[in-house]
Length: 113
Image (cartoon, rainbow, N blue to C red; front, side):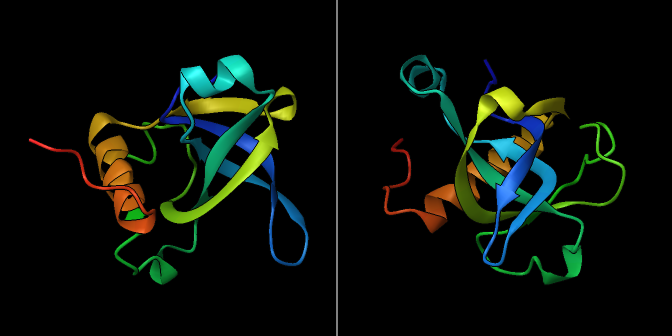
């Protein structure tokens, strides 16, 4: 099962079609225990458009197994994990920044002290 922060190559559903692309797992092991799918967030090489407070340009993209500078955008989807190909894992600092983006993007309170 994929772990949160892992990077997968998946068929990502977009506004006008499906594109094979990298994505980061944002769902938990508990979720995966009960569901056949995985919740992922979009990764893009169009880093110049990743300027929203809910976007993050990856600092350690090469160490994560990606071939070009890459950004996370808070565009989420659920996909079948059976067709996903594992690429790598985000660094702790990139994963923490993406988690902060998700807190800002979703209607959840930030973690308490």
